[in-house]
Image 1 (cartoon, rainbow, N blue to C red):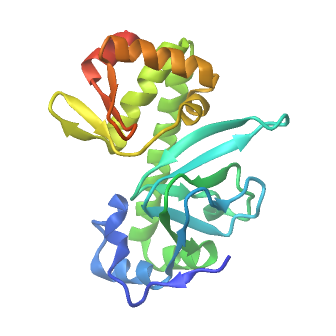
Image 2 (image 1 turned 180 degrees about the horizontal axis):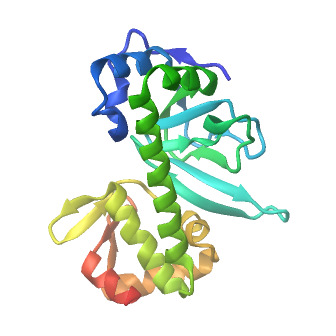
Length: 232
């Protein structure tokens, strides 16, 4: 994978929360082995089954990870935001990517070659601890997402997913929360594992009871209190 050096750019480790408390020496060491690449909207960062040689993080934009079934159906796993880890699979050995990643808008991704990272961790224990924190957070997020989808109907699943999107990237707007990223009905359907038609129907119901609103550009504004009633 071709990557671009960031030696002439500002310290980008501050974008990742787990790196902010590292001592200056460790942050400089990370910056020395970190490289970046810019992606256009709808371009792929990696494909399911490819060999994983990098740990990666999103610096700006938005990226979705997804898996494709044998019959060609896609299921969205995560919407990855700036500062979030995109892929950790290569950290523990030569493993293929278990999902694909696609930019849903113009995005910048930071890459750290896993061989260089493992060598750095051997010299700097604080870097290893930071990655353990990142790995633990990813496990918690996966468990929470599984709990959201377990034993719930489409209305409950969509309400929980919208609340999570609001918590991850929303901006307070009075009593509502504005979600800056634009999601199509198909993308929301893939996120909760149901049909686009079902999402369209449920969103219509949410708009009728003012749990959700759309601005003229199609961005979501959600009312957390009203959405929570659909889950209870």
